Length: 513
Image (cartoon, rainbow, N blue to C red; front, side, top):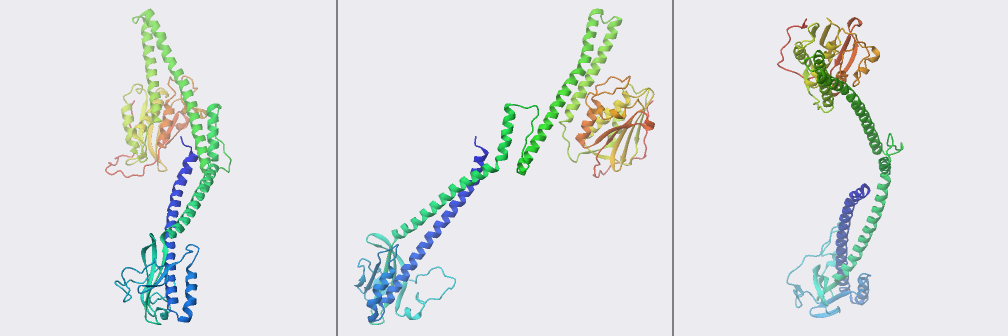
């Protein structure tokens, strides 16, 4: 498996090498074009120089011709190939460099006239006449200098040709200068190799520099990896990643997120261990009751007085165990429930339907149940209606179970400071202020005397569901300091619900005695 350092080096170097190859190709193309243009310029300049020397006065011609030929010699072409033909007679130069095939030696004319050689214009853009700056130099030029391809001694050459009528005698001469193409190629290949060598050197240097830079940049992450590997081989009781304050922000963010995840995992594991221990303890009691009373049934029989009592205790234990299991399942599902960000419901409708359904349950015959809806129209809250109903149901069941005989249970739906709110109040013994937060812990039950049996999960479920929906739940003393008032504050849903019927009354009371 490739390391991150190698992957980053490749990811950086591949585009860089692509750019270097592109730049090298463009550079070689520019060198080739520049070399060809320069060589062609030299050829045209050379043929014009010899042509002017040939057309000089007699006393100057013998001195100018050797000088002109000497000026043509250069390092890249030390041997000058030129020829001067007057008709079919070679005046000077290489006899193998013959005039072009379409040249008429008798008339000195070309069967096809060619345009003068032209090159990219300079910024001055000097006007030329037959290729010359001075109009006097162009006098007698029949064919301005032009370029063509040919062969000399079986090798390809580039030839510059100019035809001029001499002023001294009116004769027509053909002046030619040639340059071997392979000399040009060798010259260009030398520069190509230099560009290639420079590119290879730059690429090798870039690879080393990038590899070092990436190694230096990944040093904090290498440290994190080393810490994790060390912890994997020898796990400590608690583990946290540590970095210097000068470490890169990305590494610090990664370490912080990893440490937060570890802390959350540790809390989850601690909660799971605590939950498992408490759940096994809570389930052990009803199972032990069932086992003992099964022995009683086996010994005395179901028809006996002890057998009948044992059957009743077994039924109560099974009911308690069933309720505990349902609460455990509900608590587990709260962590998996996904709620849309814009999900909302009518709090008054949910609470009213739930209380109406609860009026028929056993245990309410001696209690006074009241439902107050202090809000006109729908009271929209953010969250899931089923989860909200589960919360209200748990609070209502607690208010019924922990109430005094003949007491009152009141459920209020109202809006406080724009936030939907529900209150469930009872007239039971109440909860001490120091225990109002602890009762939300799993399996924790109050220390009050004559506390009815329960699983200790109801309020834990309410708190978990409230956190899932962004709501808050708290416990306060009831009216007059008697009993307990459980309050859930939901987030307001700022949506329009058209077509909802307005409530006819501001206050609605449902009473069951």
